[in-house]
Amino acid sequence: MSRRVNMLGLVTISGICIFLLLFASHRTNNYQMDFYRPRPYYHHHREAPSSAAEHFNNGGSTTQNASIRIQDVILSERERILEEMMLFDYPAGQNNQPAQQLSDLTPETDGNPIRSIIITTWRSGSTFLGDILNAMPGNYYHYEPLLNFDIIQVRSEPLASQAVANLKKLLHCDYNGPGMRDYLEYGQTHTYLFKHNTRLWRLCQVYPNFCWRPDFLTPLCRLFPLQSMKVVRLRLAIASQLLDDPGLNVRIVLLIRDPRGTLQSRKHREWCPGRPDCDHPPTLCRDMVADYYAAQLLLKKYPDRFRVVRYEDLSLDPYDMTKEILQFYGLPMDPEVEEFLESHTKHDIGGVSSTYRDSKSAPFHWIKDLSYEEIDTIQNGCTKAMELWGYKKATNSSILSSKFDPLLPYSLT
Image: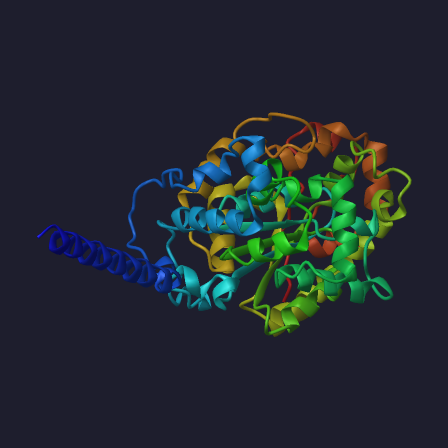
């Protein structure tokens, strides 16, 4: 009798074990499919992620971090992105963006990310616009990816090919190869290269031993459905090669600013004086003229994937212009972007690199901060650029004491 009871117990335990193994196998086999299954939409404010992945994302102890593998961090970040994107309004065919669910946009599932690029020059409002894009959920921000090229403008060979190759590598989430090696080596001693990519930098602070490794950065980048990039060292005629590449499917905004405002802002930066590509008004304005004619060609060739925005127009009407820019990129006006605009456009807070600004006055500080002699010098080297882009000259010092409006209409047709 005892032997029969024992045998019955063994059979029961074996059956339970087999069931558990089959259940676990089923969960594992269906993980990818379940993970990328589309979620329902909700129209209330997105709450912060609160998954089991918080253990990794909040760090834990140093001892625990030392034992964590790259694949563990990737797994936890994948879960975080899933939660972050739960309330995202996928374009589903709007603005020529077909994506209906997360897997349509993530490179790791052979999706095609929404790639949004800003082409401009230093101190032209790109940090503000770049941070607007980075406020979108699920965004991976390639901040000034040509930083290691120094304070120069890339207009032609021999630098143009390497610059474009580096940008394509990053947009494809490929951190391998000689060009990327130089980029990452530079970043290790100039960490602001990654700091504006807030989702990456959060992980770098917790796992510094992974931060600059291609075998970490490549799979991490491939998790993100939105990829944004701001480029301030490459002129538009060269950047057009990114539009020519059908595999990238990028959309580019050329961001333009009044040269008087740009040069006034550059005065505050220690890296600019003495650099001809940075502190010489005629050089800046020759680039603006060249960008104007390149923009005319691109508007004809890629009317749905290229457009121009003046920084002053964005600053004077940040909400409606942001909505328009996001629509051009194929993105919704997300609640996180609305919160960013509400907190960053009312008051001046922080130093010269801060994006907390009274947006209606920020573009026009040059009127008070530059002497008329400085303004006149800039204008003399920028007559053609200001005419093309719709910026009115100040003809004497007294005009600046009144409510001088430097903006005029402009046309690219």
